[in-house]
Each structure stands twice: as C-alpha cells, then as structure tokens.
Image 1 (cartoon, rainbow, N blue to C red):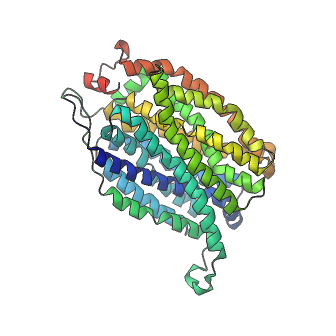
Image 2: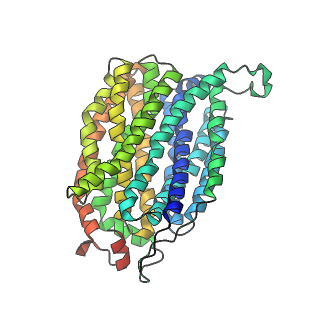
Image 3: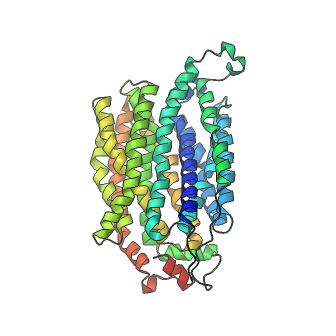
Length: 451
C-alpha cells in the first residue's frame, strides 16, 4: 500500500528552505554579470574571457558532477547532500572575493559550481516524495521561483553593494584597502549561505515512495540507460527543448545588464534596480503562472499540459525576444522585457514536473541531473559564450552586443518549440503507462508511479 505523504506543514517548510537555497544559488552564480566592467578592467580580460568565467568555470564541474550526485541522491540522504553543497558553494563564493587573477577567480568559480551541483537533482527528487502529483507542479514551480528571485536579487544587491563599496571611505578600515569593490561584493553575497545551511538541518528526509514490495530498491545504471533508450523520443525532446530555452535564458541573464550599460548608457545601480525588479516581479509571477496555465490546459483535456506549455511558450516568444535587444532606447527595451521574462519563466517548473511524473521514482534525481547537465551545458557554458563569440569574432565590436542577443533568440526559441512538440506523443504514452512502453526490467509499482 502506498505510504501517506508527509504532513503539509513539514512539506511546506522543506519547500521554503529549498527555495531559499535556490535563490541564494542564483545570487551567487549570477552576481558576476553585474561586475563585467570592473573585473574586465582589473584583470585585463576580453568579453570572451569574461564569458569563460561566467559560464565555463561555473559549469566545468557543475555539469560533470550532476549525474554522480543524482546517483547518490537516488540512494542516500538528499537532505545531507544539499546541506553540504550549500555550505561549500557559499564558502567558495566568498573565496571569489580573494581572487587577484583570472585563474584564481576561475578556480573559485569552479568551486561554486561544484557546490551548486548538489541542489537541484536532490531537491526535485525530495519534492516528488513530499508532494502528491496534483500539487507537484505547484511545488516545482514555486521552487523555480528561485531562478527569478535569485537573479533579480543578484542584480539589485550586486549593483547596490558595488556602489556602496565604491563610495566607502576605507581610510578608517585599512584591512579593506587591498580589496577591490567587486571582491567585497562577492564576500557580502556569499556569507548568508551559512545561515541557509543551518536552516537545512531541520529538513527531514522523507520516505521514498514505493508502492509495493516488488519495486526495486535501487536501479542499476544499465536499467536507467535502458529506460532512457526506450523512451528517447520523450527525453531527448524535453531535454533539448529546455536546453534551447536555457541558451537564451542564460545568455540574457549574463549579458542583458551589460547591454543596458554599453548600448543604453545606464549606470550599474540603475540597470541593477530595473532588471532586479523585472525579474523578481514579472519572472516570479511567470514561474507561478506556469502551474496555473498548465492546470488550465489540463482542464481543457490536454493530459500533456506540462510539456504542451513549454512548446506554446517557446513559439510565442520567438518574435518579441528577438526584438527586445533592438529597441531604440532603454525604456522600450525594459518595457518589452516585462512580458518576455514573464512568459519565459513559465516553462521550467512545469517541465521539471513533467520529468518527475514520467520517470520512475528511483531514477528521478538521475534524470533530473541529466536534464540539468544539458540545460547548463547549453545555457551557462555555451549561451554566454555564443553571445560573446558573436560580438567579438563575428560582428567585431562591443556595441554589436544587441545583434548577438537578437540572433540567438531568433534561432533558439523556434528550435525549442519544435523539439517540445515532437515529445508530446511519447509523453502522453508514458503518462498512460501503455503496454510496450513499459520497461520489463522494472516492477509494476514503478510504472504506476510514472503516471
């Protein structure tokens, strides 16, 4: 017989703390995008070199460790894995503030990525055991609010902290005189992670939801690989659609602040405040609205509503996202950014819910890690570098950043819509648990759980 889900109060506390950790992770990874100019100047690097720090340094181990950490999370305490990860990445963010060269900052950013690799696969698996299927899309959508809340806070806090440290009279604080303002900004955003790690100590590891004794307690890598091969059309479609959306998502996150500085003449504090507000209000509303829109589609009779929403959003955003960086002034660019950011962030929470519901319990952390690996490879590692490469090596001038962003949006959104559309039918078949799509190596309970 199926075990009861944990009490709502306990589940909601766990979700709240996981959300705080996710917010913190985006503050720590994304604050770098507010500091492009000072870091380029102090370290003597180009746009492309900066994109290596922003993308590749962070993702080098983030994507490589995701699947091994997912494997551990499917077998051991997910709460402990997340606790250790939050503590480690927070200390490494502080260490970024002591970097005096490109390679020192590169290695510290690698450490941030190592720590943050623990969070998402473990958290999505935890949520599937804390919340019943009808509430899961809301839980994953609330959790993914961390993307927009954290990104918005990184803009607001990053710009504000940098300006405060720039204005600070350090003659009374001689121990600060050897630090640049961007270094102090890293230390300031890294320290709160110790408090979030302490809150995680009160999160309990819920029982894994297995429906009968015939369910395998662990699944081998061969079984996981066999399941993915059998259902490759669904997984490839979903994984690559989300990866395409990540290219523009992270490309915009990494370079939109610099677009406002470089092409529209805004100050760091002005751009940070404007972008921070848009991401925190419009982006967060979008994350929550994804679950609402998906529920509406399901009431209309679309059982594939979670994935269908991804397709519709990508198709809708192709034109406005392409026009956004080409606006003639900052006011129009920021005005168009509101609906673009709102719609863009409706997709991720429901995409993760689709992945959990279509996958057996004992591989949910691993398939989540695989999707995050691809999304971050394309988004964090390649997204920012593709934009920077177009600016440096194709257009050949800093002011052409706007054309790089427009071109990336024009290519990636239509590709995401097509890929998500191809995965709709196999997703419906997985939800229905129909005959030949069942893997013979898994028990019936695993298949019922994928409904």
